Picture 1 (cartoon, one colour):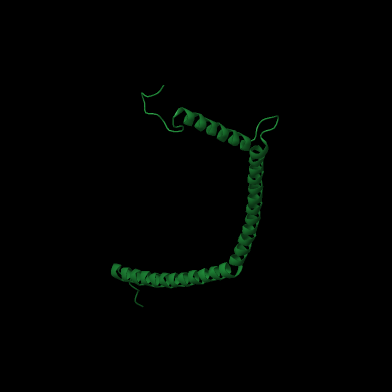
Picture 2: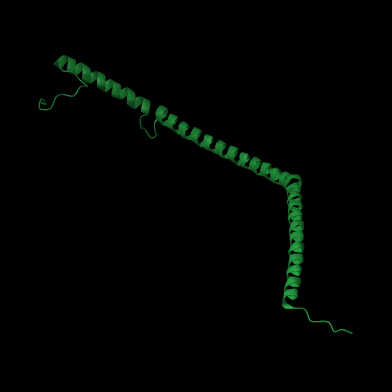
Length: 140
């Protein structure tokens, strides 16, 4: 019986290279499988997103928008009412004055016009023009 010779360095190296090539092929297959699983997972995610999450998000968004619309409408009603109250106050001051014997704005404007007319009549009697500025240095 012949004794088996131990493998040489070259044979060991060639065997290691073959084994490494086999491991690389297996790793490549695993990588392909991983890519396929990733694609499938993404598709499942897209389906879940489209079929389950999207309707939930849309429903929640519509509900929130409806609430926002109600709040906005109420704020607009309050603001409109406040503006109307302020205009009513101004109308009251204009028509009746601020009370306690104070004249109204309408009465004050009429009095101002009366004073202007009186000034114009007086100026016309004296030969002056009222309402125009006199040049500097010609003041009396």
